[in-house]
Image (tube, rainbow, N blue to C red; front, side, top):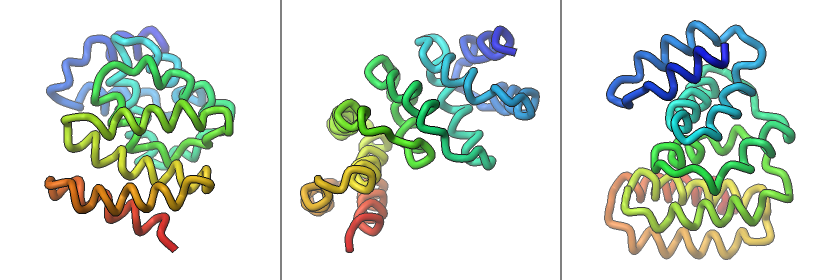
Length: 172
């Protein structure tokens, strides 16, 4: 399975998700699919497709990742080079069990994404801030203030929508 998945993922040109959906249908019953995708996301040639498939798996009922699986996956944050890979991870961040030891690296990952020119990545980074504040509440007030400030400064409607959702998630 891994060699077949790697072939599909490394050959994916990102113009159509059909090859990825086909791969998901083919392998979704395999008990180690998520583990294989976590490993393949560590390969630059596969990272976009692997994280897209992880997001797709969560959208289709994959349960929250265990602490061990999440730790393995989050260890790759600094190596994710493509903006789509970073976006996918932010989109399924709430499906990860974030260990204490990942707090700093996750925060750095999110703060870096907040500086992105890509508005979708920025929007999901704001939501990631709220998820981070949920998990590590010591910084919740600071996050609320940052989100409220961003609500005024951001001009893109799609970003403002995600900021509103982030605020709704963490504001008392």
